[in-house]
Image (cartoon, rainbow, N blue to C red; front, side, top):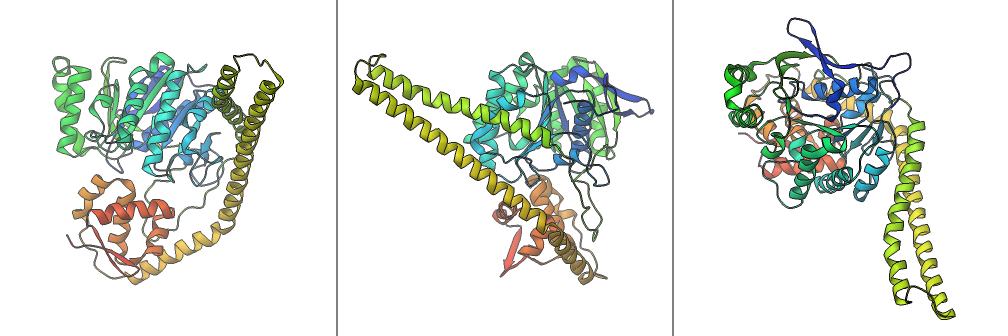
Length: 477
């Protein structure tokens, strides 16, 4: 990535300020270090991670963000919603520059490392099975390659990919990410894990993080997990009163304020206030009845064109790997050297069939890309109507509930923390609006159909919602 025009390359990364107002700076070496940024929803964990990403952009340090939530795209937008921010490639998601294919994790890893630009891998529109399949292949391939330029990997909602109790495919993903975090520095990678709770991140991965940014955290299990991190990384004999100061303050930290603890690398223990973002924050809470801000992403067509060509080369190389066993098998059958016209004919037929299949694969890829472009065009054409409908639903529901007394919604807080951001958003909207139709609820939440159905199923499985025809409401608990 090139530095922003007119700006000099940064020599340090500014995360925020100390509580006395002095700037809090981190060395550029953070790009190959490991960090955990943990805090409950609204405490500022994603802001802290994206601030580091902004700083790396301005220092010319490339990074990759694995984003299952679909909120990192705001780095391509100015705070007021106008095009701006940083020249970052987005793969997948509703605002992706290129579509994301489940089986292309390894090829995308290779293509990303060939260019010095940053990239967001938006998994928000995919199933959790796709998340794990892609991240496993992506992480494993990264560890097989040594980048020409050191690179940092941000993993948003880390507990989804490195859970405390992995099952099935999640075990393979855990092993791949754990290897990347533990050994990545040897290859030229650093990593930041972003999550809401200490206790839900696998202990073996969390204790591989040599630095921590801890924002507000309230659960007892999370405090126990922090104690484990202190014991493993800091050492009980060295932590002294720092550990008690740290643990006692976690529940009362204001938004955007947290502890930075680097016991081995920087030997720092201090309380900091994370600076505000220079770009748009899609996850920022808006007032009830307030329409969503209209946004437009910056133009990165040059990056997209270059990356598309690199990805084609990676796909061709992969196709060649697949075709090689066929050629080798044919050669073995012929004794390596064709000895007759019949042998030559068989070899030529095999090569022609291979070429035909490769051409067919390329044609399908072109059709898929064309369909994706058509879908993007349709989405853009209907964007104003969609936003107008969303505001209309919001206004109607707000008008209908005017003057009504608001129920106590604190009883849902534990469920919000347990189920994660998506289901928590549905709970919040139902608490504010009461009973809604499916289309009203999905529109107000702003989810895609597939994502909405997945979150709704999780709420239904836990017995938190009830349905009356097309209407949905929260159960009484």
